Image (tube, rainbow, N blue to C red; front, side, top):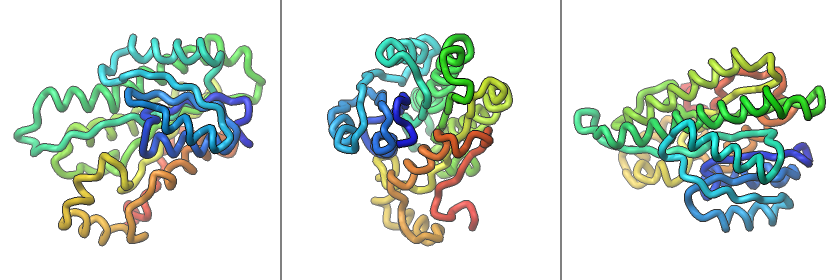
Length: 257
């Protein structure tokens, strides 16, 4: 029960990796705040079944604005009084050849995948430095966990905005860790490999791409959302207090090839 009496905020909590992360923290006794624009009833049920407490916070982070993100953090603090962990998981992907990639798709991906996570971290970091830390035990730390991607290191195919956003997430993770480590804030990221979620449905349904991907993964299988959740728990726990600015690959060995 590593997270008893702690509040863990997870964005994109309605399904996939986000939902699995919520359940993993619930098993460790956390109060889990799920943020999503979609219905959260299923996540609520799963968190409670795992022994945790769930707080739903409906929000659409698609605009990626500073005010939007600050409002979400303020809403959560009004409900819970504290935030111990923020997992920036919400993300979208748009696929098109670079020569045809629309401005609307580019802006939507960057806003959701890069702008919103930065401004959420900015808001919760400001609260911690100015208020939250003074009320917490001297050993307490704020843990910020970003969901990056293999495309934080690679370019991918027909996903230029996604690759740009995930390269950006890796950079912001390192930049904030440099500035905030002295504030008892850990900022790290996880780069999932090819995980069987809605975002990768098109790849799994393409027999050529599916085979090429599986042939490259040493584990020989697509990852499951649960494979990522354990990494999030580790990065949010006291076991990682001296880890800062890291991008942890959980990819079945993909990047080792």
